[in-house]
Amino acid sequence: MAETVTVNVSQSLVPTTAVGFGVVLVPSPNAAWSGSLVRSYASEADMLVDYSVATMPERAKMRAWSSQSQHGAALKFARVATKPTTVYTLSAVAPTSKPLYAYQVRVAGHGFAETLVSYTSDGTPTDAEYAAGMVSALNAVAGKNYTAAGATSPITITGSSPGAWFAVEVLDPDTQVATETTADPGVAADLAAAFLEDPDFYFVDPIPGSKAYVVACATWVQANSRMMLAGVSDSQVVTAAPLAVDDVADRVKTNGLTRTGVLYHRAPQAMAASAWLGDVSPSPPGSVNFAHKVLAGVPGYRPTTMHEQNAFGKNASIYTRNSEGRFVVLYGTAGDGSFLDDTRSIDWLVYTIKRRVAAVQTNNRVVSYDAEGLALIEGAVVEALGLGVDARVVNASFPRTVTMPALADIDAATRLGRTLPAISIAYTRGGAVNKIVINMQVL
Image (tube, rainbow, N blue to C red):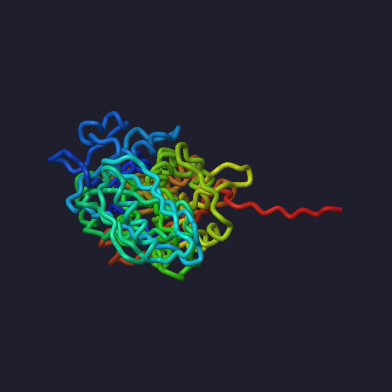
């Protein structure tokens, strides 16, 4: 697949440092400090003053991120002005056909212990009985920070205050449908403010996994040349066919988002996307494939083949068992179906080209508008591509070309404006092997 990327050396398309390509930012509704908007922590122990409760989502994200053997030096958190109110809906699937069935969900959240909640239907079940039973069971959880309500499916589970985070895990998504419906209170403005103070990050790791919040984050990420790995737990990501219900994965795909990867995991409290980021983010672009990653500390649940097909049909990733019997992330794609590590590699090469060409302009008293000056610029571009080969961002097995504009073809007005016409670069991306097909003939 060929892509055309315009590199404007005079503008910051990717305003981060080389180190920044491994930095993750978490928009935080529970930040306890004032003044600066962004703080970095190297470990959960570093967070105890600002995040005093172990069950805070920020602490859970840090645990997942830092549990990976190759996690980065620090995780960044951005204090947000707009705090989301967590909301889930929960429905029974064909409840009248499930007599004496034990419905189970697991809840976890800020300020209370993870708890298994269950309701068992009677011999003549109805949806109203399911709703009443689950509402009662959910509201009986000690220390909860939410209220469940509703007389029929879907019942609603609403956080007690803005920023009060909790998670709802359905153990069998074919018998109950959980959907996070948390509204977007204005996360784009919070990201923009954090970016203005500290642009040296590349990945965004949101806490809510609702369609509204993920799409709002993804839209900002897309406009600002960043990347997001969003953890989602909505049951219909895996139980509904593509485009059937317009779930969060459907929406990211429909919007053609090239910089957001959706990772389904039924347990949002496991923070699977944070673990994924902990594994891939510290590796330099070109040196890591986002797929086939084993996530330390993240429980694996065997989805059905149909669940996998539904998720993959929406270009979502899923934590599933491979042929070796290990749980891994498959397949590391963005909403438009492209591979996330390819986009990151292209961003890094853009940054490298811009930096090398800018260095030529800075380190020379004048880059003359003649054959000598164009040769200096061409040399910088060729050098950047060579660094791309070293990083395996550029595939060394295929030719690469740099085509400079011919001086004789540049008109006087363009020269007077001191603008050099476009330089054309062609190369083959490094990439990785994600899928393997073997044809075997038995005689």
